[in-house]
Length: 184
Image: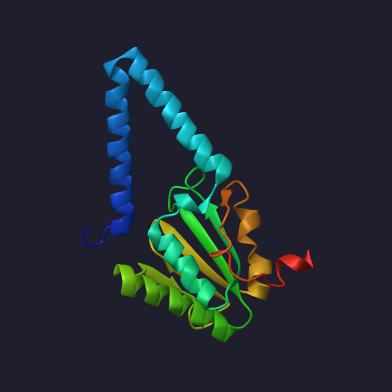
């Protein structure tokens, strides 16, 4: 990664991969009309599958590991928002809640430690750790938000980013059911 680069290295790699995929698809589409039809239909099928199902199979290993680490610390109300269609600064928001300041810090610590230990990935930025009402772990192509329950209700990121697709999580990654969603 270039010094003073505006994007973390993982984000740059993701954009380069997308560029290569687009070039490959474009190269295929110019070869013949039949190939173009097949490329379009397979691209449309993949888009429909990702948007319609929104399943956790599409999540990469880092997101799954972060969700698992949060779940191990009893995080609740885990939500994944797919921002690829509505934002350019990141691909996913991972949102979790803790019941108190110590639990919020423990969740953030567990996510950071697990990703560092297993995948050698560190966040580009960590915000709000001391007050622990809302801790933000910025990994470039995904941002993990850990909220204390009251702050989560106040900021309500799910409402602010309601245009983003919500990714359906399998039960083993969904975390515990907290009181936050039951109050509505």
